Length: 95
Length: 388
Image 1 (cartoon, rainbow over the protein chains, first blue to last red):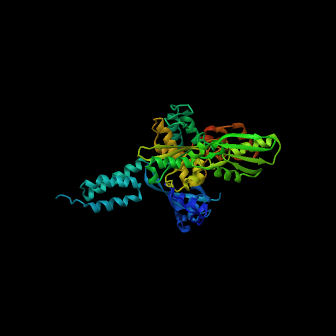
Image 2 (cartoon, rainbow over the protein chains, first blue to last red):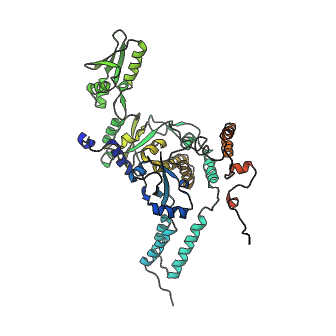
Image 3 (spheres, rainbow over the protein chains, first blue to last red):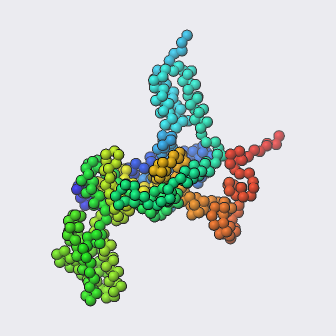
């Protein structure tokens, strides 16, 4: 069985390696941080306060990979069985 | 004079402008349908108008009680499901929770599913070779000393535990006596000297008491020698796509994803809490939908996937998986009356009174209780007259 040599394995920490695998998983949607200026316009369009959006925890792999902070809004591009592709937004909360 | 037909490019670019209003799937379907049709400018305009109007007609109205519709659409078919917990679905020595118990498990977001399962997909070079797939399965399965020992004797006079290993079992797993010794070294803790004599290993323990020795014996037997912690059983099965897939009982998603032989883009645990922890809330949302659909399909029930989306959305709304019940969705309602109406009425009312909560009468349940108009459908809108 081909195994990675120990030196090769040590170059990345285990957490980094897990995150890399996780981000390539088919269940991971594409996502991006909504810039602060656009966020205001977005909330006005949705007629909602930030906390009224669905939340996402700051410890979530998706948030960590984007480097988003609590208070940010992230745009998630979901694959939907009924609509093809849809954009949804989540509000980053601590936890 | 006959009207001029538009060429394909023009039709395409015109329809693509609809992406602003219509979902991409619908736009693509429209493009497909119109690829062989000759249309004039005016006709295309009418088609686009008709499609858009039809789409807006099918959209849910503001104030529609979609939660209730979902509850009934999932609830009614579930009355027809089997109640038997264990069902042997033709898989050897492999049991899984199916039907109503599994459905309840998902909706209640149980921490520990009755049978935690994983589906492990393999990289192409392993997925089409049964031998190699079995090899991987064997390596994944956790092997404790208990699986390898022929006999375990406790010598109470000399405070030693003698483990005689089964040679055949060792050879089958591709392990040596030394591997077992190494595993024992790791748990040393309370254990003393370890000596190897052929196939038997004796461990000297510092303790004298019988109970301590027995405890040590159990600890030694449960020691992991090889495999991945948590994977109790691993079975190789052929899927419909002519691919060998490993099904496991017991889960450890993180460790399995790190294996080189595993296709880490598709491998998945069926424990929703584990998925939420490792892959995040969005993945958990998809998993809830998939698992619900799997249960319903398995029972031959046809529930629209939009209802399952609704359930998954509500369960993952606050970034963590929460159950639909008194410790989750229903228990976190703002209205004390709505909470009291769900379960444990008296406790909820006393606690609300004790905490000095107030009732705002914004939701459905509390308005039904007090006999007011319910904020649903036409009751959802308020009209105000502007004074001239």
